[in-house]
Structures are given as structure tokens and as C-alpha cells.
Length: 237
Image 1 (cartoon, rainbow, N blue to C red):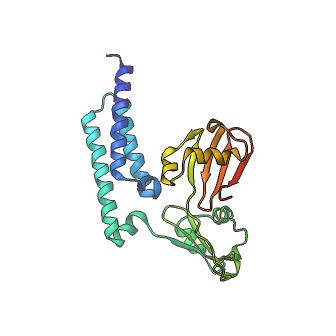
Image 2 (cartoon, one colour):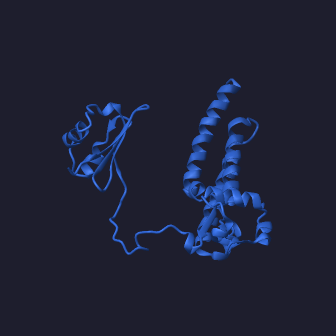
Image 3 (cartoon, rainbow, N blue to C red):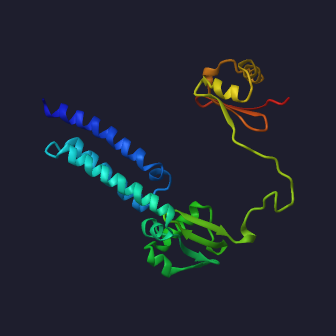
């Protein structure tokens, strides 16, 4: 058999083996990526690529290696859930880098983060004045968490003793020109009702709509395909 066909077959096989093992490890690889997760993912991916193109490597042995790494990752994740000590070793812990507007240089040195990178991360959070920060911590995932000083935090309705209404998730009714009938049924609405609402803005075809969302207040947001206008249609009227 030509080598190119062997590579294609092995690549196809290793792709689905890799997908299976990553699924076994769980969503933490993506949702809460730590340095440990990153190394494990890279290693398993490297073994999968070895199966794909290294024709002189033993396929069964390579799969066994992937399986061992997967089992160890699952075991460590399980133990981390039940042991703070193991969790700290594997994932690390948050490091305070700013306290009451003061940069803690020694802590920055411990995690090897330069001050200009800290300032850059603060700007991403919308903070341009370090004196506005009560606490800032670098999380094990590498992200920064910031708590502003109380007098620098935005007011909320609770601060003003104002009543606020519940605002849940909007429901997609049309997506990329396709009517989502299940979503309509979940809200006890009909296709005729939706067409009536769209007709208020002279919209006649679902195909011209990129997305249509109904929020919990009864407002229908409609965005047309292409560089066209969007509409907010009150459905309670």
C-alpha cells in the first residue's frame, strides 16, 4: 500500500482516538485550562500525531501511551476534587499582586510576571489607574481577577434600594434564516405569531434574517443578513 494511504488511514484512526480520550478527560481541558491541563493536552496530541505520521512507530504502543496519559489526567482531576493539597500542587493557587492600590513586587517575581504585563491586564479589565484597585490576583489559569475599591465600583439598583426586574436569557427564534420551531414551541408561540410580529417592520421572509431573539421582557431583536438594519420589535403591544 502506498505510504500516503497509510498516513491517511492512521491519521483518520488517531483523530478519533484522540477525540475519544479528550472526551474522557472532560471539559476542564477547555473551560478551565491550567498549565497542567495544557501540558497534558499537548502531550496527548503529540502522541496522536506520532501515530499519524511516524510509520515506524508501534501503533498499539502509542495508543497505550495515550491511554496512560488520559487515565493519569482523570485520576489527578479526581484526586484534586477531594484534596486541597493535591489541587494546589497540580493547579497552583491565586497570587495577590495588588493590595489596597499597592503593587506587591515580590509576589510578581514569584510568578515571573513583569509589571508592564500586569498593567496591560488591568487595562483589558478597563482599569487605567492602579490606585483604584483594592485587590488584584493572578489565577492559576493565568487570568487576572480584580476588585475595585468600593468608591470606584459602579452603582447598582441594590445600592440605591431600587427594585429591579428579573432579566433571563433571550431565546433564539430564527438563526441564519432558519426558523427554530422547538424554541417557538417551548414558549407556546406559533409561526403565525412570529410572522405577525415581523410584519410590523415589513419583514416577510425568514431567509433574510440572520438572527431573531425574544427576550424575557417581550422585545424581539431582529438582525438582517448583510450590512442591513436591525430592529427591536415590542411584542406586548
